[in-house]
Length: 125
Image (tube, rainbow, N blue to C red; front, side, top):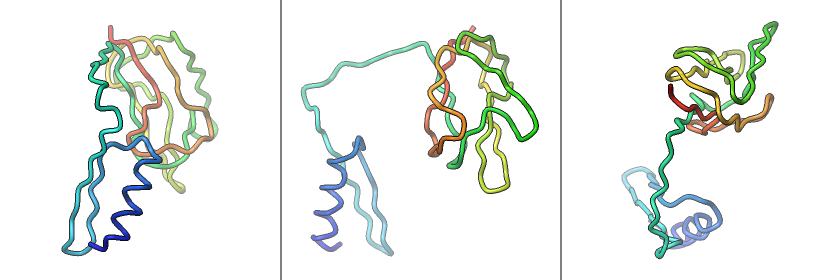
């Protein structure tokens, strides 16, 4: 791998919150891991379960022509559609992984989302 590319990649990583990245180019492969907080070893635990974006796209609380009035504190059931991610003309459901209370809504309607981005946090029942 070219040293200039490696240097640019490392500098770019330092400007993000990424801790690890793997780069593949043809037969070449390199993994980089940054440790920006070596003294930070506290483990944070939570009973909240994240609901992650199934793909990249635009988040919508409801499909076209439908309504969805979800609010923080609402009860949700396993498999309940919490919203959709619009990918072109396709819609991918965002569903509750289990029964619980919707504690945090961390996404707004019409905003872009990335694959795996936490959009909701549930407190399991």
